[in-house]
Length: 491
Image (cartoon, rainbow, N blue to C red; front, top):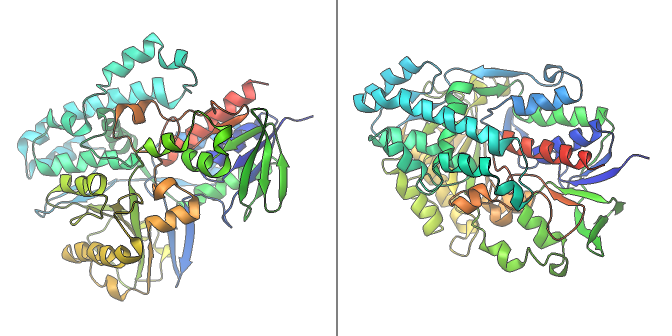
C-alpha cells in the first residue's frame, strides 16, 4: 500500500513537493483554496491583454528543471524558457540608465557614465557575489536544517562566518561602490526576499551573480506556464489536485497529524505538508494547544516581509523605454525602507518595477499594445495603513512616477486593475499580506527561519517562502523538493 500525503496549497512549494513524493511512490493529494493552482502566481486575462499576477523575474532554472529530470522527463516538453539579454533595465533619478548584462565590459562602460570608480570595482564585486552564491548553494539552498546538530555543524558555522552575517548588504556594497545609482541597483536584491538592503545580511549580494551572470529568463506564454507545466507533470504522476477546496483544520490526535478537514470532507493522511505561509497555517489551522512552541505571541514576533501594490495596465500603445524588466529608482532610495519598515506606510517616493512580457512576446497584448505588470513595494498589513483609503492615492503616485519617466497614458488604459496587500492576504492567506513570508532583516530571520518540520506535531511539514531556505520562486521550489525527498527517505 502506498504511503499517503496531503499537501495544503498548490503554489511552487506544494507542487514541487507533490511531484517529488509522487516520483518516490507516494499517493499525494493537493488541496488548493483558489480556483486555479499557483498560489501568489495567477493568470489574469482582460481586454485581450494577458498578465501574470505574481512572480515575474525568473532565475535559477535548474530549480525547476531538476523536478522534471527527477521524473525522468525533460522540462522543455512542458514549458520553454528563454534567456533575457539584457536582463533588467535600471533607470535612475538623474536620467542615467544601466542595462544589466552578462558582458562585464558593457556593464563597466555603463556604470562609468556616472562613476569611473564604481566601474573599476565592479569585477571585484562580481567575484564576491559568486563566492557568496557558492557558499549558499553548499550550505543553505540544497539541504534542510532540521536539528540543532545540523545548524551547529562546524562546516556550516565556518561558512556562515565567511558570509559576514552581521554586515548588511548595503554595508558590503559600500566596500566597492560610492555612487547612489550603483548602491540602489545592487541593493535592490534585498527586495527579492522582501527585505531592506540597509538591514538584510550581505549574503544577498549573491543575487548579483545569480541574475547578472547566471541569467534572467522569460517563460514562453507567460510566467504562469511554469505552474501549468508542474501541474501537468504532477497529474501525470498520479497526484490528485483539488482546487476551490479550503482546508479548515489540520486534525491532530495525541500530538500526531491524522489528516485535514475541509468543507467538502475529511482527507486522512499521516503526513501533511503545509504549502502556505507557516505563520498563517499555524494560526488558522491549528489550535494553540496543539502548537505549544508556535504560540500566537511567537507568530506576532516575526517581522513580515515587504508587501506590494500591484497594478495591471493594458495600454493601447508601446514604450521605447521599457524592456521585459525595467526598474525606476527614486533619488533617495533609503527613505523607501524607512517608510515601509519603520513607519508602516506606503513610501512617498517609491521605486517602481515594470514587467512588460509583451516586449519579448507581442502576442501577450493586442497589436500595438502593452501588458504592464507594475509593482511598488508596500508595508505589510498594520493599523498604520488603511488600504481602503490608501490604494487609490498610492496607486496614482506610482503612475505619476512612471509618467515622469515618459510612460504616459496609463490613466486611460484599456485595463487598469489594482491588487493591494489586503487582497494578497485574502486570496493567499499570506500572514499580514507579506509577499515573501518573513523578512530577512536580521541574522535570525535569514539563517534560522521557522523549521520545515513541525516541532509540535508529528507528521506535519512546511514548504514555502516563510520556512527554509527562504523566499523567491526558485528557492521555494527547492524547499518543496528538499522536504519531499527527506520525507520519502524516512520510509
